[in-house]
Image (cartoon, rainbow, N blue to C red; front, side, top):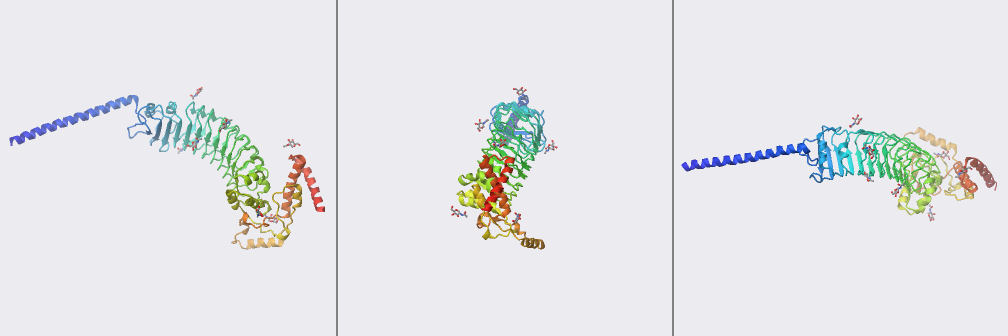
Length: 507
Ligand SMILES: *[C@@H]1O[C@H](CO)[C@@H](O)[C@H](O)[C@H]1NC(C)=O
Ligand SMILES: *[C@@H]1O[C@H](CO)[C@@H](O)[C@H](O)[C@H]1NC(C)=O
Ligand SMILES: *[C@@H]1O[C@H](CO)[C@@H](O)[C@H](O)[C@H]1NC(C)=O
Ligand SMILES: *[C@@H]1O[C@H](CO)[C@@H](O)[C@H](O)[C@H]1NC(C)=O
Ligand SMILES: *[C@@H]1O[C@H](CO)[C@@H](O)[C@H](O)[C@H]1NC(C)=O
Ligand SMILES: *[C@@H]1O[C@H](CO)[C@@H](O)[C@H](O)[C@H]1NC(C)=O
Ligand SMILES: *[C@@H]1O[C@H](CO)[C@@H](O)[C@H](O)[C@H]1NC(C)=O
């Protein structure tokens, strides 16, 4: 019994020793913590290793030790953070960052560019800010950062770029200000960017690009203006962009392209004008683009193409005119690039238009037969035309229009005859259409051109006559005046033409 009591006392004593020991260990730990907190209050947290779960910014770095991180991906959380927040000083622990990203997790949580952090990072090469609310970019915001190669500001509610907002960034190669709300590009926004090769301003609301607004960017290769609201381009819009190879103007609101708009872009390789509202291209719209290989204008409202349009872009290897409203695309249109189409792996896309089934497109059948390119064959197979049912073809009296007249005499002798439809028949057709509105107006029906029988692609006498007049004029002009056809000479040559015709008929 006695020994049992002794044992119990001993056990109690041991337990109390154990407890006091644990207590002291705990106290030690607490002391440690307060010491650490005291210490960190003086030199701040390491931005790559923030313990506070409620911190407004958390960064993930590939190395977290002080002064070792080169990459930080930072998340800015709800509640917002202002310029004076002590947290910004935590970036001082990582002065060697080369790549810094801010991803903002909620609207309005970051309303400024943390320049006090960025400008101290002397090795910073890449800066990404996404989903901030930045509004206007003030003068010289991005300036004097000698190592920065890439700045990407995406979805940042940027509304305005002030003069010189990007200046003196000698290493900057890539500047992307995408998915913002910029409405205007003034002059002298992009200044002293001697390495800039890639400028992406897509998915903004730009409706005006001032003359010469890109003129300091002499070595720029790519200019992306896709998905804006640009309505007008002048000869000076792209002034100075001598090294541009790719210009993306897709999905804007352009309705016409005037003479020499791209004339300074003599290195341009690729011009994308798809999904605009283009109705009119002036004859010399693309003059100067001697190196252009790809010209794409799908999804516009083009009805006709000037015959001289492609004279200035004879090097084209891809011409895409799908989904327009083109009614005639003649041999004269395609002539400047026909050799490319025959010999090289060039392609011409013309489907989805309103081509009339007449003699002016018979060259398509010929080209389809001549080309060995699968891609071109497939592209030509897709082209359809609208038959003119109001015409009454009398195939006996008609010969197929020679699509590629070579000499004046050939033009003169290839006169074709065609009986114009008789009016009664036309009346009948119209009445049938009127009285039964549920009938699909069959005139809209499109037929693949390559399947049309030879002799189906015909023109009426007047159409051919007009065609020939202009061809003759050109040929005669060329023969007599070496290609120089000023308007006075044109008038004169039309007199000669009529004389020649009289002679031909008299024969
Ligand atoms: C974008 O900026 C405008 C004007 O500065 C402001 O009214 C709007 O609330 C901002 N939108 C967002 C989503 O931050
Ligand atoms: C940028 O550098 C230039 C010359 O080196 C200096 O004159 C200018 O004040 C600097 N600008 C800023 C905003 O630091
Ligand atoms: C520029 O950055 C964008 C976005 O990261 C990228 O898609 C593009 O390829 C870059 N261009 C160059 C030339 O580095
Ligand atoms: C244009 O770019 C090429 C390389 O892309 C370069 O060799 C050439 O010097 C540039 N031209 C100008 C005027 O900067
Ligand atoms: C296609 O070319 C062959 C040989 O070059 C020729 O015999 C044939 O008549 C041509 N067919 C058409 C429809 O042009
Ligand atoms: C169809 O042919 C007639 C007779 O040649 C012509 O007057 C008319 O303009 C043509 N229609 C179209 C849409 O070309
Ligand atoms: C064509 O002739 C006119 C006057 O005759 C002249 O002014 C013009 O320079 C010439 N154009 C070409 C391309 O020779």
